[in-house]
Image (tube, rainbow, N blue to C red; front, side, top):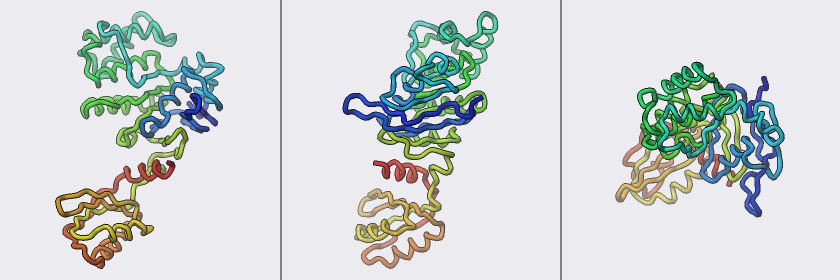
Length: 314
C-alpha cells in the first residue's frame, strides 16, 4: 500500500487568462483525515475534479491510490467514494432505492443479499434507517448530505473525497454530517474540502491551506494553525487610534479585532506570549486620553492564525 493516498505535483489549471490553480503540491497520507481549507473561489473544487479526472490539468500531475489520475483514471477512481458539493438524487426515488441504484453503478459494490445487508448498515450508520422508504426529494439538507456520504461508501472505498460536505447546512445538519465523518475515521482515508475553519478543527488531523490557487501551508493541524498563546478582551473609552497603532507594531501582538459599543470600543487582542498580558495592560494604562473600562483574559482563537496565514499570501 502506498504511503500517499493522494499526491499532486506542480498541478495547474488555467482557463484562458484565468489561473485557477498554479503549481499546487499536495500530499495526503494514507489513513489520515485531511481538511482542504480555503476561502470560496480558492480552487478547492477544481483540485478535486482533477483528482477524479473530471477535467484535465494545464500542467503537473496527480496520483490517486498509486495511479496517475490522467492516464489511469478508471483505476484511480475504482477505489474512491465521492460526494460532490451539491449531490442530486432522483426526487421520487426512495432513500434505499438511491443506494441500490448507486450500487449498480459501482463495480466494487456487493450484490444480492450482501448488498441488502450493506445498504442496511449504511442506512443505520448515516442515521437514515427510519427513513429508508422516504423519497429523496423531501429530505432535509443534512439528510441529503448524509445520503450522499452513504452512497459514496457503497463500494467500501479506500479513499473518500467529500467536496464541502457541511456547506450551507443549519447547525443541526452540520453537526450530524461532521459526526458521520468522525465515525468513518480509520475505515478509509478521508479528504474533505471546506471554507469553514470549525469543520477542520472538529474532524481533521491534517490540513492543507489553499489560497489564490496555491498551497500556502500543509501539515498537522496543530502546527499549521497554531493559536495565539493568550487573548484579552478590553473595553476602552477615549482616543484609541494612536494606542492601537502602537500596539499593532509590537512583536508580541498577533492581532486586534475591534467592535464599537456606543461610545466605547471593545477589543479582542491576541498575543504571541502569555506574559505579554502585563505589557498590554501597561501600554493601555500609560496611554494618554484612554480609559480602560474592562480588561480580562479570553480563549485564544485559531481564526486569527488562519486569517493571518491566508491574508499574508494575498
